[in-house]
Length: 84
Length: 188
Image 1: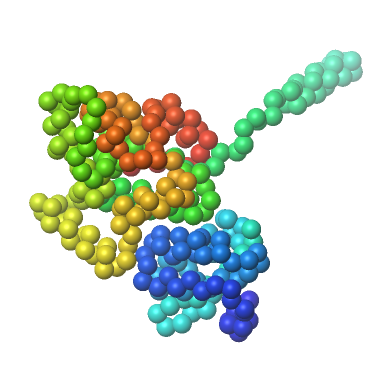
Image 2: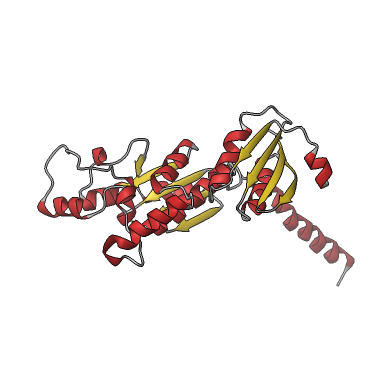
């Protein structure tokens, strides 16, 4: 998905993981994913560059679909579709 | 070489190759997950172990942690605990001198008489790194198995009532069984 498509997604839940450090964003994402409907979309906001690697790997490992990422100054918005 | 001999040896060859079909199907599922020995009672090393455990659990992998020797102290309750039966003088000394639980562990380096540990905890708070007690809680919530080595307990005179709830008690056989079913093993 390109940036415009990602920005126009209907997001079911926003997880603001800014300021939390490893493994905080992963745990926040896991917790939040349980609260959205199947095929729903979660947005994870992180200020930690490591998260941009970890979240896509986590998503594919546990069976969710990583849609893409939007980069903004000092933060990243990652989009994941619930797959299970 | 006659034609008949060639045919016979070819038949034998086929017969030998055919043996692979007799091999029993593996009865157990493919190994997955992580089994760790936490031998160290140093704050920094146990932090690393708990971060790895939480990450693996978040990725839906089964995680087993076996706490032995100095690592046993990670599972101790915060304060002095009244135990059933009497401890020997040595056991009592071990109990008093070793750290009581995750809040009392020290760094392995830059100790500076406890100052280093205080400084790193302050930095962790500032930078929103989860504390060791919270990482342990989060691991247990995610189903990570904590196993206390009963040989170490016996050796150091640590009783069950001195350890946190929700843990298992076992020995090396249990660790090997768990490790054999895991794809990753670590010794920390």
